[in-house]
Length: 297
Ligand SMILES: Nc1ncnc2c1ncn2[C@@H]1O[C@H](COP(=O)(O)OP(=O)(O)OP(=O)(O)O)[C@@H](O)[C@H]1O
Image (tube, rainbow, N blue to C red; front, side):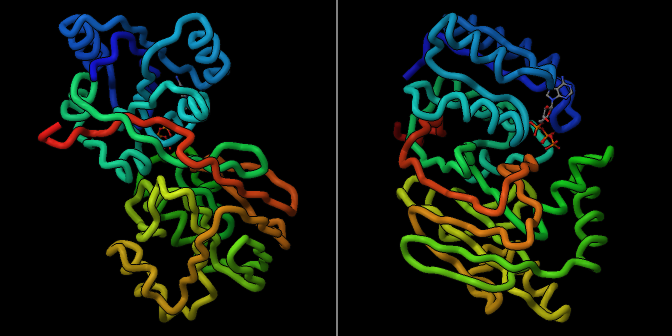
């Protein structure tokens, strides 16, 4: 189905990629297919409010986020619970949700979605009322994400460097987790609240997760000896972390996480400050997404 009106939300700085040519490509593609369009360029300030105003003024049939996970999450949070689907042209330093949805990482190919796609529905979560579409966590990775966001250097190299430095001194923290299926109390190296599968870095923390099954996973990495670190890393990058003796997965539809040591938290890559309790609720099939069509579609 071809959408006749599209809003594009383009982050000009994401992934350190210049996007002037892309804007031209979008304009000619839309003109070629007779699509009415608007391109909103993000500024990093009040973008969410500005996009809300644009969406209130005109009912676009779909909204494409052009950028990385931050841009995608911002746009997605505005579309949850509406009939307007989210499209993604992945152009960030992390493109986690796009990868999990099977959206082409090549820009030319992703642009073909404008005129050849299907629309599916995915679950979303809220953490204390804040939307989480991809992966949120507490513990080691959240600390690395926070340091990364505070720093000036971007890219996977900077992330890996911070992770290595923090790993040398990181101590697992205490959590209590109550869900509708299973409870946990004890120390964990990290606790991921997973609606999807893999981080933008490709580390797959939740290989068996399904994004539209009405359930989510809490993936724990339990304390491990230094000698096990490389093995865990290997399993994360070979989609097999669920076979590690140091991993534990709780599949559920509701959870309350007690962050007993007030450890750092992030939602879809953005650090947040919560109190001790985090309530996680799933909203089944609450977000419509534009996906590649099978060849026979
Ligand atoms: N014009 C702009 N100037 C500066 N920052 C911007 C601008 N537009 C958006 N931003 C910021 O970009 C961030 C989102 O970037 P996004 O995640 O999409 O791309 P990214 O390259 O993957 O970035 P990151 O490496 O930070 O994850 C948000 O923090 C947002 O405030």
